[in-house]
Length: 296
Image (cartoon, rainbow, N blue to C red; front, side, top):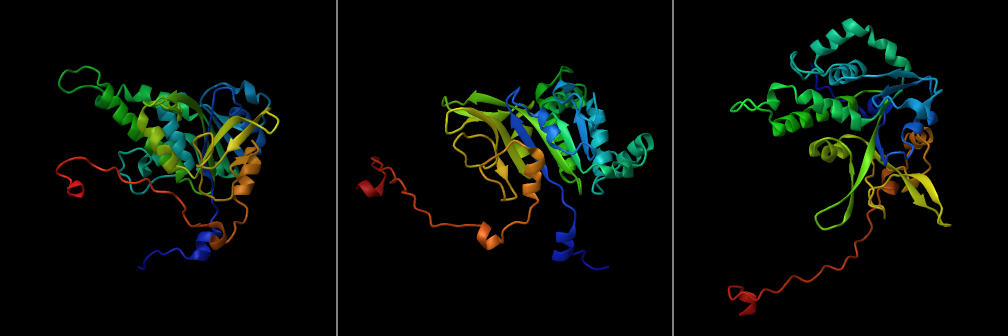
């Protein structure tokens, strides 16, 4: 047996899928992005049951109503994780049990994209399930333990997202609501609307792309819907472009955006630009303490 090294040619020949999330305020048009995808090769996971925006869309749909169904669909779409024990979700045993009910997962080969609307509702289903688990009950008092429920919720959501992230050969897009809040210093901040803090904090590090769908003023002061795609942006919207191919602002067309992400990239020496840093470093504060030798 030799070390299972994947050569550069093999790695580059593998079919890759984009994993990303799109956030925006309620009513911004996130669900309508489904119209920009190929209906014959896209599977719509409709958690919100608010499909009026895509009435007439001719693609196939899943409608999970419980967290167990969300986990089952994830392992059916992504396959088993061989590192897990049989009693854990997303294990080989979990996968085999789901296949015995849903049939051959090869039937999913015709879909190259999964559109999940929304991660916000998935988080609510997950938390509802978590509150009924033993970890959400105090061993000492027998009363509900909300901290235990939130701890379990964070692990469940991260496990679900990570499993879908590792789905080979398929694009997976999560849609979620973006909240605008004020921090402790009265500064405006944007946060994904997901129960519990852990999922929102870790999600950007799991997926490849983080996009904000926002209304931005153009040169004439007219509001235009647009994708904000880069981390450093003047609006402080959450965004990340792991591909390095997107401009700061892109047209709100998910199909064309994926084509651009998968287009041939520039060579790394041209794409990775490391300019000289010209930042004025503020002087260190001078201490007036008698124990500071610089003042003696």
